[in-house]
Image (cartoon, rainbow, N blue to C red; front, side, top):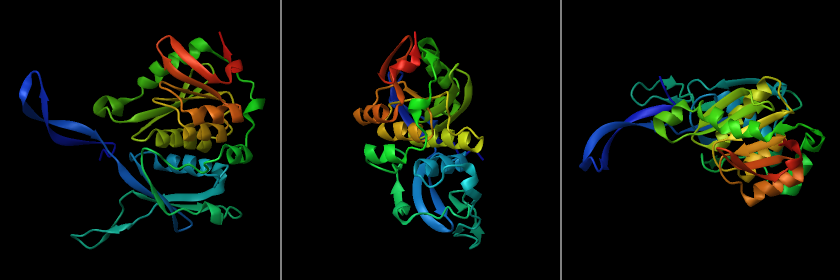
Length: 280
């Protein structure tokens, strides 16, 4: 069953069909994912199903709950999460994930959540740049990675080539991790750009790429505070987006030593912080 997209009947209007025509369209799926830690609900986030375990790894890393994939002993979908109304039997919705932390990795009380987060805003572990720099595990300023400007300018095209679900729906964001030579390692799509980024960072963590020194994170839209936060906490030295960064994202980049590129399109881009890593 394809849970990333769904077909739905619509009425379309346009010059060729001024009275409307009925056809089926493809929608991006958005469903809740409840994350439990040691059996206790931590948060409920809205996401596009798929690569959920990667998402959980990336989100918990950004929240400061884990710093390594070994901090998680087990991660699984909860069978019998709900009761089927017709049959009155438990069934697995694949929308509830339970994480068991390794001994010594108990969830701090100040990290406990029970909130619902949307696919638009995500979960930000802190609203303070000062706290972010304090919690930053990897010093990006010691990462002397250099990358050619021409390499970064090629990344939007490479990212776009991975966006098959976007081609079908027009409703999904994408995030990808590249080497500093422009080689694609992984790309993920989701209705929320922060979710797509969590999936990429979670994949990197599961594959031992943490800190992700010498790598580039490319996203398919604007770069917000939380995306800069996630990149810095994952040890990724360069973040690039096809649209504008926010003022707070620039502040985070300057405070953490992150190179931040925006409006990366065709043959142009703007470097908002960390220009010393970019070679002409």
